[in-house]
Length: 307
Length: 235
Image 1: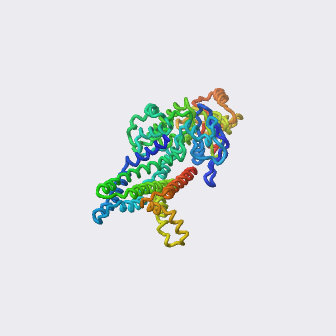
Image 2: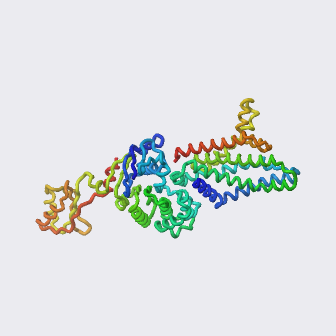
Image 3: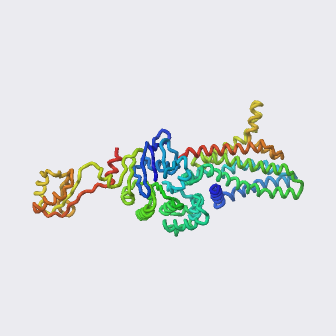
């Protein structure tokens, strides 16, 4: 379990992180969201013990990252944003080097490297020099490096940045697989990634924590009206008249769609789909579409971080 | 300690996997060899003095060149973040790098034993001067290495690291050469602080603990400065 307590970190006069507190429970996959420069990387650098905090502290399984630096670091696997590979090394040697630095006994290293090769799909690149690898493979070698000592906690800073769509899906699947047994904290600014792989979302903006909860909790906490759209095959004029004076909802948009059917966008404080359907039936309109516009994390993100 | 040695091995293989170590060793041997054989054959002087007087000059350039990448390149490539979040202390990382430079230096010096053996076969080898000179050369090189590593920790640009390391070492090298231009009391201090002065003492075959202590404390001081620089986690 990770406890971040009133963490503050500044670079000279610039306050990167301002008194952030949160907890990550065992086995959770937590997504760290925020615009560029919000303080995501800085928070992660403090959590891994790279940067010393100005104020506050981080406890990992009850151990302080400053006082018990080495046992804490042994529990954490870390993939920094910059994918830290030695370009002059062979992939295998690089993994062996990290394994040795992680104090994995010499006899077990080959086995761990084999396990990582399977998990991250590195069969083709084990004997290649790191600087000959594509961005996707570099990222996978970085992940293999972070997991080589089988840590209970993984901290991944933008694990999918710079990858092509296929690679993103691969890495995301890999993370989901890893997340079944481990605590994972990953940062990203791709919202679908959070929806795809995280149990919980923490949004930070300008160095401060602005939201913390499951994706559902964050969506339901959104203020604003429900929006429902309907498309009709006929009765456009009548519908325009009736919907225009309907007390349950307000027409915000009205027009013709690409198929030549008329559509109405309605806004209301509550979900009015059932009432709309009954209204259509009672007037004998041919209803071809009825959709509630679901709020997604993108709306949450925009609402919380646009200031 | 295991981890320090792992790091040293990685540093050494980085030197030897690329051309760096071979270029340094070959050029070092070529220059010292030329000076040695010049003295031996042209001036009929059977002495290692020529080797010991040119080697500190070569170190002045070569050692900052060897150490310029040690931390600057790690910072540029982002691997410093990996190294310093591994379960090792910062000082172990620095020690690993210093050890690799020291071992490379030891190899370079050991290769010049050929000259010493040649002399021993041909004539009389001044044993005290030879042992003192070699010891001095090694201590001088390690001290330069520690300073070069500190210079490298200050920047992410290898060229800046080289120039900085060279400038600091050159200053130390010059200190005992400018004693004529300063008041006598200050001159004594400057002479004591000069890196070459202590080497000259050792080269004479007088192995004085003061000279050894000078190099060890300067190495320790540069090491401490590096620890301090890294603790601030420069971006």
